[in-house]
Image 1 (cartoon, one colour):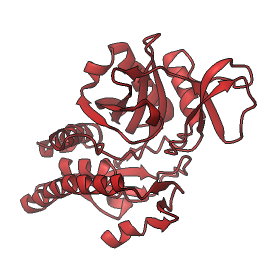
Image 2 (tube, rainbow, N blue to C red):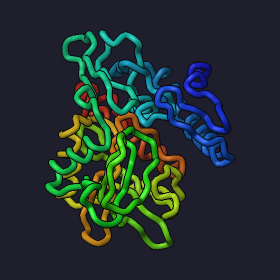
Image 3 (spheres, helix red, strand yellow):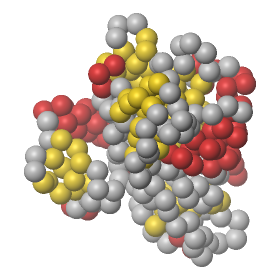
Image 4 (cartoon, rainbow, N blue to C red):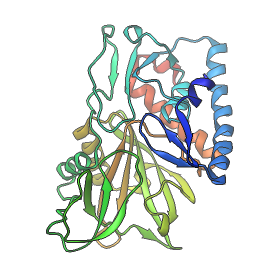
Length: 315
């Protein structure tokens, strides 16, 4: 297994290249610190898997198509905390999970057994323009702007998933191919930090959320200085939770994460990104909350995707 994990990466010019997506992760000291922190959580998550094997209780089987998640994806510890048993044969699984971390995917349904629960097969495009259009339908107001006519500061991003290449520019200007243009949301909080409200989706609705904070200078990077675990009800109003749920329905997202920003001026929320293969829990989250968030998602996972197996719910 470990040998397969390493095969996902290639060291090149001072950075680790993710072969599947083409993304580059700089080989800095902070990366090795993050790996050590994650390994501590991984070791504890493995104990859930071992306990399930030892107890031998009945549990739902789960298979992934076309790829299997690595342990750094959030679904991996959630799967083990819920007691789901990973199998390779898609045609025999109780739960069949579409898993491909590219932006646009081929979601052809494989051969499955009668009654199998399909997850995320309705979500085949998480490009930024698709996310913006789905958000506008869900919320009734727009995130996207036309750079040719928009006057003032706006955000330019790659259409692709997980690039973290956003930048603030002034409009109007001619658009660049492969880029998308959005409202600049003022989500700065005290201390020179910005705050993202990451909603974790299970069964098409937010179950938990993370307050992800980092310095303004690192606005578009996935390098959090602080992460706080919250319930959705403590972060969003009932109407906002309904918007997030409608958005998930619009793009067919049954499992994943969406990045929500709250604008200081208007008070409105904006969904700026969606990820159906999100990694987690975030490295900067405390270990106790890593375990707590995983157990909460595991309970929701069973309720949403294996309701007949509720007697085996995560504790």
